[in-house]
Length: 429
Ligand code: GUN
Ligand code: ZN
Image 1 (cartoon, rainbow, N blue to C red):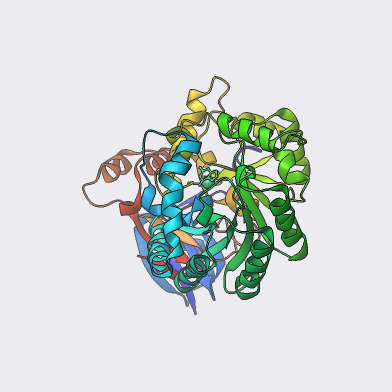
Image 2 (image 1 turned 90 degrees about the horizontal axis):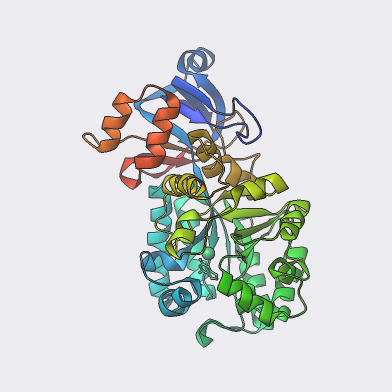
């Protein structure tokens, strides 16, 4: 059974940082899908001519975009969004970690997991690399909620053996055992994948990082994710904890945690040598502008990353980030580059790429998701502003697709996300 969705379709099947013509738009467009896969994408007329028997969903008043990809977001932190007035290390100890410790209670964790997964879907996020919990039952709760909802999620138990609250610490041996059990149960089940997740070098001994490296090397297809070069205070602390390391990246690299399946969040204060090694390894960086602004961590050097050949995508970094919307995060990325003296001027098509296909690449999923090309999974978002909203007014007056897309990144949030599907199945409406 084939379905055609008739809408204004926009996606970036090519990288706009690499050349012109990356944005593909069909004003009266059609996306045909069958068995969860895209079988046609183009003008409605063309798609209809090929799939004349298909059922048609008339969404002409909506803009269809590929499902958004969030490359860094913390599930246990949904309840601490908006905790103002602190920089990273104080924010962690005073606001964030006490909340994370509450997930020791499995019923509390299950409720948080449910709200988190609903929030992702309601914001149009169809794929996410999720920083999990320190507690195995809470991690189970996240995987269960994501599986039930049908979202494409990579996540894993967060491991640490020092520097946080004692209730969040485990020994490297216990971390290895619990991680292996979770991998056994969840890696490759439905759309779930496992991500080896040392919290950051401040909270992990070298032995703990080595255990993470061992896991990453021994399980095919797992991702690795952690934090890197987020704030100056954090970088100083890492240098004092690892006197033998050349730099922050080296604390991970020496334990086998730097590779093509590694996604490092932040990387605001990075050296040229670290950029060279990140690019050489094919690692990705999750740029989290709303978090960087909220905690005052700094202005992300996007141009230096791209010039060095490092892959960059977006992360909301909730709860330091200010919400689960990748559209909001795209706007912040744009504004942050405006504020840097060497900032890269970003267009709406750059933002769409960063919020979709760049994330798919970073997570090793570009054959599967990120744009609406034939053969990919039918993961998409329909944006329809509420009647009478400011966005509705702006869209009525926009004269080009680029203007409309700029307005969507600037104004469309949860209330304008009308429908979200993963593999053709509704995950939010
Ligand atoms: N570094 C270590 N843990 C965290 C966290 O939870 N949020 C952010 N923004 N940085 C971190
Ligand atoms: Zn984070």
